[in-house]
Image 1: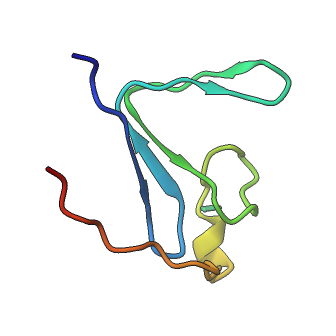
Image 2 (image 1 turned 30 degrees about the vertical axis):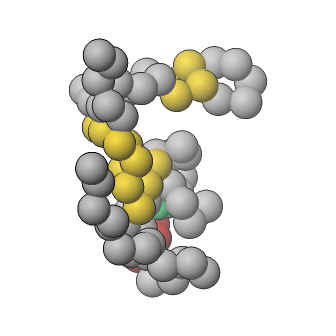
Length: 74
Ligand code: FES
């Protein structure tokens, strides 16, 4: 059975990805990620895209669609 990969949205913050994953940019180059967890920018203000650098908090970014509450999984 393959290990599960989880993406979760933080309220007014990044997307957290955990598990086994690879990140491929539009130009086809793969982004090196150490470990099995990364925070991906959702606000568009990071100077280190695709990763979150905390700019969302410094700029008090508010998501148009707040992160929904988690639902129970089977
Ligand atoms: S979500 Fe954190 S810098 Fe964009």
